[in-house]
Image (cartoon, rainbow, N blue to C red; front, side, top):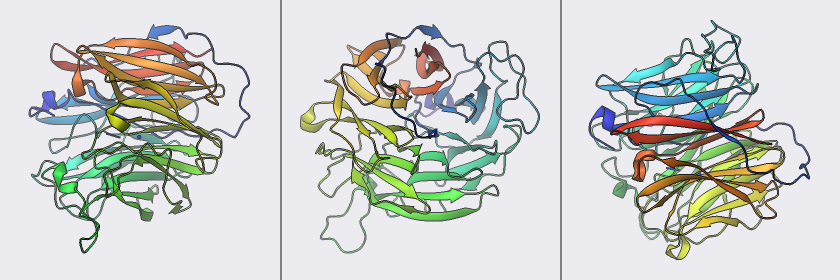
Length: 447
């Protein structure tokens, strides 16, 4: 899975993407077929202001946590709220710390994680959340390191009291270079540590444009001037460990994604070769090491520039599904592939959708019976949010519905979010109304 305006509010018109999925114990695939069309209901959000760049995660006890960015003065604020279905009075996220007020609609009062006037905010490289089993919340954002457009760093914070207070931010990348660092994925590495992966431009020429990320020909001396993929682990004191370079040459600006399988975190991203083939690769964490990256499927998509359209992954036990956008032969399409061995191998992909209307911006989720896929289409200047549900083994014909018509077009509507909790699926996306970004959401009854 991966992925601007001058004024602060206008920058917010361009939102968001992806999060880690905690795998429950391995379970046999439920033999029951995919259910009939789910019931759709509006899901009111606790946000009155202009907002964009949403991220949506599920905690171990089934609560949902939504984050977003709002304009604030001459800068931006990263905010969040937690949702508990059927809640009357509960804490915002964890039982530690002071409880936050929960509204009648199940939402905690929105809180601010951080704010600043030197942030890098755009439609594709967006903040993310993670929750660890000790009750802590983790969040990241991007902040400028120099005047060059794409010179920015990854800032990481932790809260041990349900989001009431947050640690001093730590820079995930410590190379000190004014280049691009972003497209982050977070996941619970252990009970009280978080894993972080990111695209790291320390080997590129600079941060003035994505053209600086072009690799040198293979005959050139020295290391390639290419974007790299790195990962590290951070403890409760934000002390790093296990940092490594996973891939020395990746696509420059496509989102990464991660899901935790029964055998470790499964990380997906868009790879890149010297011949400009940009297919989806996968690697799995094993302690502080990572398996050699391998392709989910050899699409053979030759693309001379970054498509800003990363993959998405979901896992349950040793089962995993990956969805991605590709365009071999200049035919845009959305594909889905399944692994039954925690990402060691993948079956042949199914094509979910294809044609010039397919925008990608995909998210995926997996439950005991069904694989869910969410994506964006745009036709005649009008966007829509589509959802397909497959049997968990991807057999048979999928069920497909239109979730919503989206107000807005182009990149301004960003990357929609999908999460499963209880007996419902939750979908959040961005619309542009009267020139301002707004978040909308629905629930879909699962069975």
